[in-house]
Length: 259
Image 1 (cartoon, rainbow, N blue to C red):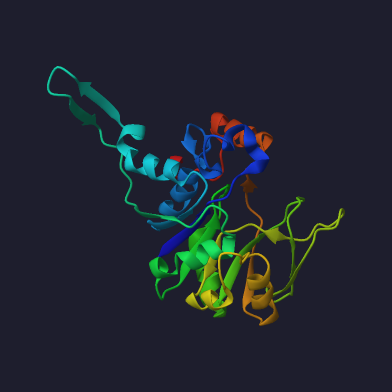
Image 2 (cartoon, rainbow, N blue to C red; image 1 turned 180 degrees about the horizontal axis):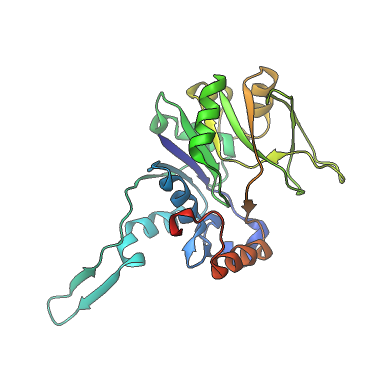
């Protein structure tokens, strides 16, 4: 199964770091948050990734091109014709396709641009700036059980994001703006989608969280996987520091591969 990761935005809310690199490449625990997200999927044997890049996309490409240099012990022997020796190679069982989906392309447009890489199969989609300890197997099992086009992981968190109205059967009926006292669930990413989702995407101006999601909701094709475990996005330096503190404490819930 393939995972599409949206990693092309500017990350303006965390400009202390994002003026130098795209937000998914901002490090927590010494590794880009993008790496952490990929490790979450890889823990469940999901190892093929399509990264929708845009802003400073060369940083993402160069990091993966030099993965050994970033993650292994290296000896450079300049006296022996510039020989380089990689010690205890650190590798991942990953296939990574990085696509430049444009500088100002909206989320739906980015997804539309990688359609040919996704092919005609069920795939997963998430944002490149949030981590969680979701069980991917249970998420996929839920998606297969209902036969709809899309499943969104719905988390309950008092933040500024758009609200999901969900029926008792788990069907998302609409999106709306958050009220100050609203405690409804929000879109936490970690989605599972069928290829028919591309029918709802038009061009680079398409915002996935607007017309496509509202259209699927109106058609009864959008389902919520209600998740009450750990979930945290990284929009601000405060949130970055919070994630770093969890890693430093050895209690980062999403880092199952370290347990």
